[in-house]
Image 1 (cartoon, rainbow, N blue to C red):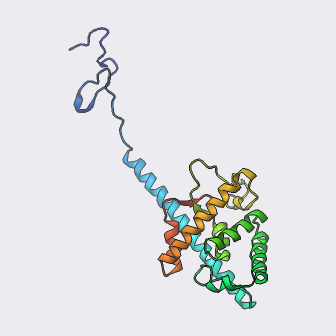
Image 2 (image 1 turned 60 degrees about the vertical axis):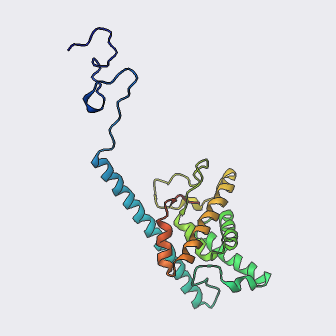
Length: 219
């Protein structure tokens, strides 16, 4: 049957509703979902991103352990094996704590971290009960809890000459200081929770990297 002139049945536009019916004036044709190939590509991308996060987390733990090994050889403070703030740390006198803070901050700055980030990293780590030396490596890895939706990314665009350079170690602009402190705090708090939940630090770091809101956001 031919459609009458001026008909609003939508036949002239070739729109069909589900089950072969003709779509009426107020009926919308549902869109098709993702094709199988698109879903496979998304899954592959997610797996690669997860693998990269786990690799970065493992590298952070290994770097922390290597730093402890080098410090132990020099008979200096070298961090906690459990990656948490040691109980005896709170019993240190102010002078010893000041020396320890200067030590960790100086090492962080020597490796390219801005003074502002190095000092904030140390102070927030202690407040959250995480070993500051481990916090140093976690910040270098760039793995953090996602910033709030209303926030802004703190890391600058990666330079073309070296896409792996951790630009989040550079000084942040003043408006981002609050966001940076919040990301440090939430990330260190989550890392401590994983360390307390898993007896093996390797498993704790892997679990941290697999958290749904943890990603390569920088600080």
